Amino acid sequence: ATAPVRLNKSGLGDSLARPTAQADWLLSHLLLSTPYDETPFKFTADTEQSLFGSARGIALSDPSSVRLLIELLLLSGLGMTHAGGSYPASQSEHMLAHSFEMLRPDAPATLHGEQIGVTTLTAALRQQQLIARPPAPPSLAFPKSELQKHFPASVVESAETAFRAKQQKIEEAGLTESALKARWPDIAHALSAVTLPAAHLTEILTQAQAPRRIESLGWTAADYAIATQSARYLRDRFTCLDL
Image 1 (spheres, rainbow, N blue to C red):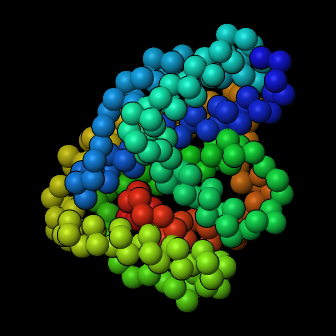
Image 2: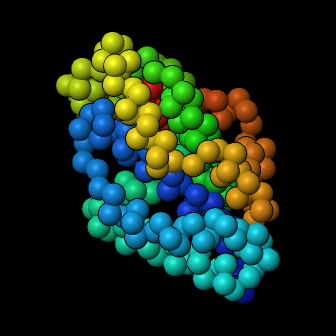
């Protein structure tokens, strides 16, 4: 509780990724039959609810609120250990942040959790759009020449390898327009059950007086648009960014 308040706000921002990460992980499971396990979220559910309901205490360095934050981050780590990877806590929202970092390594210095708080809002809005209507099938084309305009050759080479692995899974799943339309009501219902509205997540950050907009991070809209369009190609995880 005596740590710099900015660090605790950053920790809160990182913890905000659970709803979007769980929705993405579940989405991949439902569409591509990739593994999914709800156990990590059972570890964190009660503590998360308590912390998100007392986010104002983070801005005030309230010991009870900070204790909840530390417990939640530790339980999240336990969940990742159980899952054998960062799947329960790192999906599209982290891909957006990492994409921007690779695009603009010279951007103003920010803390990881500050970035994730903001990019989680982007991911949550995208998921809300998907829940509202059936999406079009994901594109399987890899825009190598376009990515080469913005990223180092080593990043593009690694991205191509990662995307090819995901591309194969998508092809095997047979995600045609008619198949997605038929299955979407059930999928949308399942996603709605695990995510939180972007407005609610925004309010949590507002109560904690934490960054909520890209401008707060010193990011420009033009750069963030490129990062957002590129993020799905940089990792083999299937998320809302693929639809």
